[in-house]
Image (tube, rainbow, N blue to C red; front, side):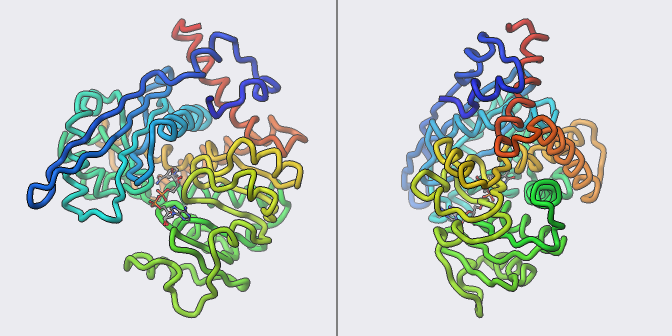
Amino acid sequence: MPVINFSSVRKYVDVPDDAERILSRPEKQQIYNLNVHHDQGLLVQTDAYVVYYSTVRGPAKGGIRFWHDVNLEETTTLAELMVWKTALTGIPFGGGKSGIRADHHKLTRFQKTVIMKEFIHLLRNDVVEGTYIPAPDMGTNPIDMAVIFGETHITECVTGKPVGVGGLPGRLQATGRGVSTIADMTAAHLLNKPVEDISVAIQGFGNVGSWTAHFLYGKGARVVAVSDIDGGIADSKGLNVPELMAHKTEGNPVVDLPGSARISNEELLAMDVDILIPAAAGEVIVPANAADIRAKAVVEGANHPVVAEADPILRENNILVVPDILTNAGGVVASYVEWHKGKSGALSGEQETFEVVDKLLGDAFLHMKDLAGDSTDDLRNAAMALAAGKVVQSMKERGWI
Ligand code: NAD
C-alpha cells in the first residue's frame, strides 16, 4: 500500500485513475546480496535494497539508510516519500532510497567503508549516469558520501559530501534547519504563539534531531527534552543545547550528560509540550501510544514517524500533525543546491543554503495551510495533494497518462 491516500487527496486535487495505478507501485525495486571480506578474511554477507519509486519528475533522489533492520518494504515507503517531498518543494528530482542491512554501531570505519564501496560497485552504472543520486540517511554521514565520491570522482553523483570534497556549506545542518523553520511557522501560524514562547521535545539526537535543537534554541524556544536510542533527558526550564551538542560531538549518548533528569523514549513522546518532534526512526507513533500524545502539534522530523492508523487518533485529540514530506525536506532541497553547484562548479556559503531551505519550505508551508483552509487537522493530505498535483502534471507532460 502506498503512503499517499488517494481518496483523501482527491478532496483537493484531481488524480486521474491511471496516475493512481502508476503511482501505487514503485517503478523499480532491487535486492543486492553484499559479500565482503573484512579483517582476517572474515566473509560478511548482508542484503541491500534500492528502490526508484518514480522518476517522472527527474532522477531518483534519496538517502542510504545503514541500519540493522532495513527491509524492502521500508525502503519502498521511504522512496515514495521522496517523490512527494521533491514535488512539494518544486525541485526537479524523482524519488528513490536505498538501505543496507547492517548495524553500523558494530562496525569499524574500515569495515563500513568496505561495505559502502561494494554497494557502490554493484550500483555503479546508475550512480555514474546520474539515474540515482544518493545522500546520507540514518546510519550514514558525510564521510560515507565521500567514499562514494572517491569511487566515481564525479562531484554531482552524490550529495551530503564533506565541504572539502565538493560538499555544500550548510548541507549537514539543512534538514534540521528546515525542521526548525517549520516548527517556528507551526507555532506562529497554527498555535498562535511566538517561537520564543514554545516548549519542544525532540526524539533522536543524530543529524536531524541535534541540528533542529540547535536552531530552535537559537530562535529562543525552550528545548525541554531530547533522546537517542539509549534514552532521553528532560528539564522543564530548558536544556543547554550548546552543551549537549558538544557532549554529542564527543560521541556520548545524551543520557550521560551530567546533571539532567533521565526519561525514556516513551515518556518523551507523551510529554505535555507545544511541539513534539520525532526525529529518529519511523513508525514511533502508532495506535498503541497515539492516545498518550499530549503535545499540541507533532512536527515530523523523521520519515514516517506517525503511521496511518495513528493519524485519526491524533486528529480526535485535536493534535495537529505537520507532515514529514514538508518538515524534513530541507535536506533534499540543500542536496539539489549541492548537485546544481557540483554541475556548474559555482561556490556558495552556508547562509545561502539556509535561505534557499527557508524560502522553499516556507512557501510550501503557506501553500499547504491555504489549501487545507479550516481543515488544519488535514495538513498531511493537503501537502500530499500539492505534491500529487505536480507529479500528475509531469505525467501528462510526458504522455504517461
Ligand atoms: P542519524 O543516524 O544521524 O540519527 C538517528 C538518531 O535517532 C540517533 O540519535 C539514534 O540514537 C536515534 N534513534 C534511532 N532509533 C531510535 C529509537 N528507536 N528511539 C529513539 N531514538 C532512536 O539519522 P538522521 O540522519 O538524523 O535521521 C533521522 C530521521 O530523519 C530518519 O527518519 C531519516 O530518514 C530522517 N531524515 C534524515 C535526513 C538527513 O538529511 N539526514 C533528511 C530527511 C529525513
